[in-house]
Length: 65
Image (cartoon, rainbow, N blue to C red; front, side):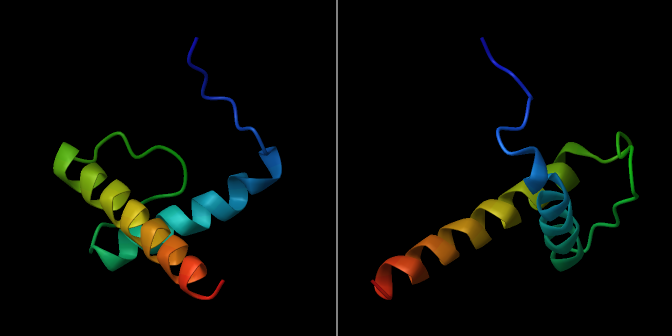
């Protein structure tokens, strides 16, 4: 059964900042709270940027080990 419940509730604020940063990098303006007016393309751009940055961080972490 899928759940939207955060495994680490304390991480919510950090994830929100990360999302806002990614949105800014791809030129999408996000509001605090509801953003249901975003197009699929805009939402996908934000998610894609977040994944790209996570992969880059993981690759950099592996190189330093």
